[in-house]
Length: 438
Image (cartoon, rainbow, N blue to C red; front, side, top):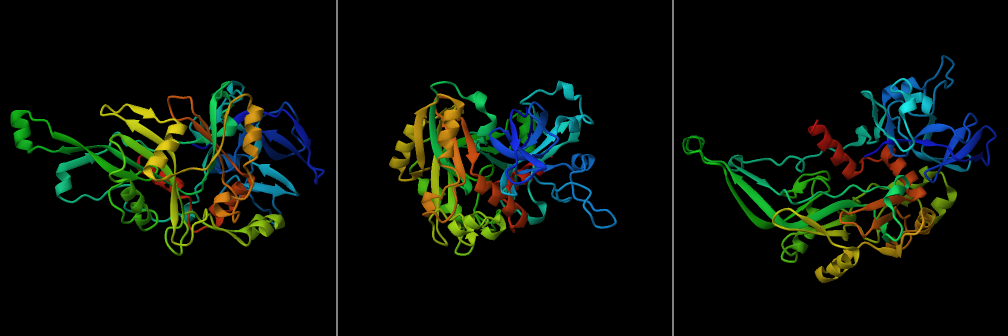
């Protein structure tokens, strides 16, 4: 879930190429601010990939607007989008937006806000949300609601133990989650679409004849059996027609691959990368010229396509998590080493493992992560940049993992959202499900 954060500027330094600008570090991110800010100021920080509400943006004159002479007398945000992007300004990176905490005074008593507070809505006023470009969203059919025939009107099929993918929060905002001597695994974060498959209990509820049900006080009939079922991040796939891409046929081979392989109760979570078909990559592509960085274009060519080494028409699935769930719905998390062994037994691939170590300090963890950011993706033989790193704390009973993204990927992601014909499938799916749930 996207949110803004209350924090305090600890250090501030001059911009390397602008006299009227300076830079501060917020949660390890460099953010450009004007000369009115100083160390010790309490602020609200908006990470990239967010959208300010129309009310909040207008109240604080953050969107572009012009006077009669065509001069801009507002901010730099597009009125319709109001999205926070990763950008470079005169050679310095700016990773997010910083505003004085006073901008929230209209909506709440700011003296009650403390560092670390997460902000989305204040006193009924929306402040920000995750940015999903509405104008580019495909028609989503076939996944969220499954059409029913007449027979299905009397039957309800459910998979209550088929758990959705866990959300992976940003590493930068979760320092408090780490303890000394935690067992840490670093793996590559791959830019694809989520996949899950399980040999789990399928429950079928059959409605009784209404007259007999009332006369004899009969409950509906419930039967169960173990069944292979697959899904996207949030949606159970009953068939492979329709869906976000127009067809989910490219997912079917991974469902079929695990048939007769998974023990009862096992659920496998992974990421599918590469191509849907010969013409369409799973994730949107981007013109590198829009990055406005000659060195980036020189290194990665004219266009970024997140192929991960797959040829057009090909895709691969990388597993990152396995669980076991018993007949009562109790789920046990399989540790990383055992997950890797299970991948070997099943004949599937584990996400690229980078490091295993014991946690010592926050600084050490971040230095380790930085080595794998803003570098060419090895799986793609360097043809595109890495997305980022996932940090998993392995000695927890519950799946606990955090992500950190490459700067270059953040820039590409911002551009793609503004220019691509398609938004991120998982964000679109999340949007649709949340909208239907009210």
